[in-house]
Image 1 (tube, rainbow, N blue to C red):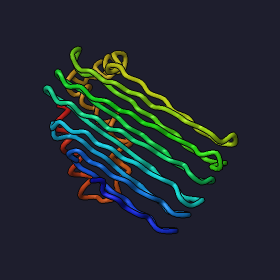
Image 2 (image 1 turned 60 degrees about the vertical axis):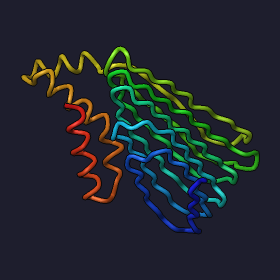
Image 3 (image 1 turned 135 degrees about the vertical axis):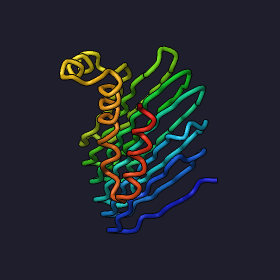
Length: 213
């Protein structure tokens, strides 16, 4: 049974889902509502997570962030469905994964713009780093656009750590382990820095620091 959250007209809400297990979340946004949602998966547990966001009133905005670090034989899935049913709304999705060991993960994102949802501004990004040759990532960002006056984009990338950046940092006197940890923390930082709760942001940052050593 999905958890349903209704964000009223002109209301602002920030939600942080830390280590959700089989999350099933539906959010409806009325006119001029503001949503910032973080989904952070760091505990190494198998999980399938579904998020659905519907825009019901003009002028609403949503920022959806996801961060996951998988390990061992963990299997993690995150599916998002963003429905722009009225015009003049904005949505931004940023999902990042770090995969280690024999873990596997997936991101399926569908962004749908209805015929009457003109002047929609929406983006969807998924970036992934494989930290072992046996880790596996499946990514599938999708757009369904039925309006003609919109600004929509999507993209995905999967690869390894930048060897040239590692080499440059080692040339500046850093050990390989330190350089690697710094690059991975920087990869995560733009997601974590958006969390307004100082205590929770510090807790997640410290957990990531331990996991990327």
